[in-house]
Length: 153
Image (cartoon, rainbow, N blue to C red; front, side):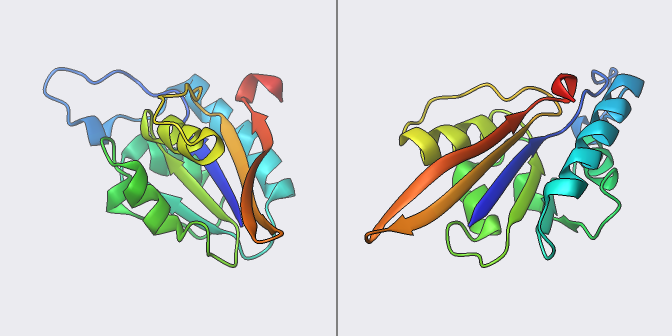
């Protein structure tokens, strides 16, 4: 199974009284999302599921893909790793799953799956971490297939 973790692109800071879920992308964030979406559109296998946080900045990031998206409330800021993995059906999904979400959850998920650690790894805004799980000799192995930040494109 492939699990692709995509952190939302750069967003405006919350204005006084603004709900955190309503923060939009900055113009720079819009460009970051568009660049990463172009790369992902070329890389994602057909049939990949796209799961997105309900936060406006995550929705805007994912919409750059111009595909079918599924909003998952459990992926909102403050959501946990277990909820993310459950939504993605890790490691048993037959199709690749792209999750558009937030820190620290994405970094925590990467650390757990790759190192068995509860460390809060940093995932840059707009970056993608592509993980792959395979069975070899009856043992599940998780490898890092790719890490890409918008500035690398």
